[in-house]
Image 1 (cartoon, rainbow, N blue to C red):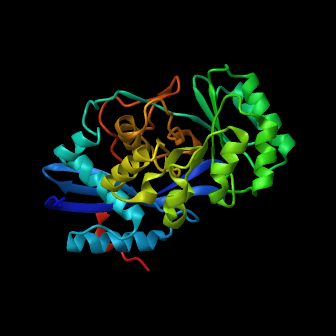
Image 2 (image 1 turned 90 degrees about the vertical axis):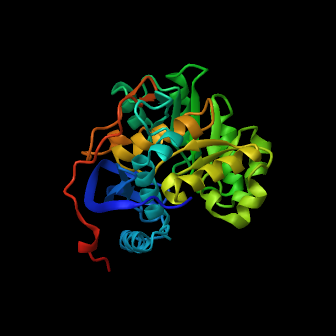
Length: 344
């Protein structure tokens, strides 16, 4: 695709504190820092977030911003995926053609998208979350497992089953924390009832098809999508039915389409997820997921309430759906010329 002519661009730094530290598979997430890009092209204005998350993105924030500067000077694509993602979002939002293609226009073609609840905690915290209404209306609840004992994880899943209907879904995510025998013991103890899939449970992902065969529970891949040597043998293997895509790790939105298409060809549905990006990016990804994500899958985009504050209004989530009405929000930040900033 030929780059659209630019009329101008500026950036603004941001910092969002988490309501409480979130235990990811690669450490605690307590704050999200990054920059927003404001881009004028094709007679429109677009915004994109550039916020690589340490432990997940290979590039640092400074490296991502240097990559963006070089790409804008030479009218190319940033090398850093997080920068390529932010620039692509801004270009798509500003361009009438791309905005329509990725469902970013007003009103969007699809007015809602299904999203899952995300829970990271123990049994007592789950009971408190239930009392607070954090699971209300959601068809799908995603649980982090594999950090405690088999008994603790089994009790947690049993509790979630007790407060949901048989038609509701449970997703398990072990963040590659388990060896095969431990994963088998955990899933045998939990059992398959209501479990939609298990996301990356094993240290060695090449064993995922066998784990799916032994347990009868579908497997999903996430980290494996960024490991080409392993992916070739895993994508489309029996029992591996879902690919979980985090767009800011991919790069441009066009590349995202390619990944989704390749997954479909190999028999995998696509679920969108995120790396605790801002309310703006969640709103944008909700629109993209509504048209590019797999039908009848809920997406991991209901995370805006995990922050103390944000740079724009949060998307409304009701009844397990993100509402996509109205225009994309505008980040309320102090903008400055990109070339006025220097990155180490």
